[in-house]
Image (tube, rainbow, N blue to C red; front, side, top):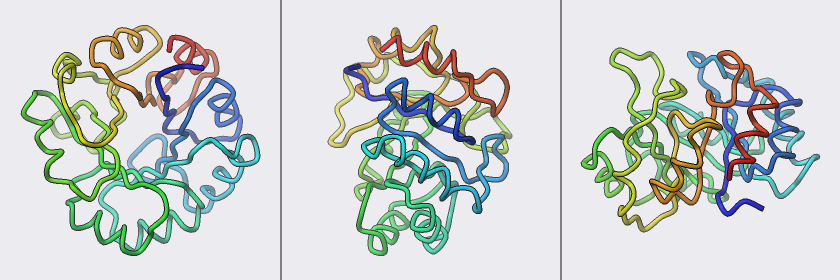
Length: 214
């Protein structure tokens, strides 16, 4: 068993869900954001989440949302039956607190864009978040906040002290994930585009290879 926890995100069909679980993922993530090539329709989410629990009930499910309202976040998470909510937009701490007041089970994650050490200071702005995901900043004028396959300087995380758990994301793939973990000291990683044969299409061989490097 890997000492590094793995999240495979952007899954859209049962076959890739099964392979991610077989490969050893702790978390599997589903994106509900129309601009993403990994977008899961509202009508399809509950079935995908149920498929995870039927394969391995210990694997945790995460819904990725971008700038939702409190009602949207809570209703989607409850309707799909996910364990955790990941906020990947410009949400503030008040929104996290309001979601928590309505949905007391599971964790609320906050993704933070990173390109320089100063960006890590944003952790202090989110006392209500249970877990963070450090992702590379998107390209200028990007129409979505993540999933671009870009990485950042992992060395800025090496001596970073955080009072809550975090995942390393951004540009990870089978060729660089071992180095990324060693350099950053990450205890958990998130991958999406790095295990795809084309945009939005997960590749079984890449999923196995990625997980096998950890």
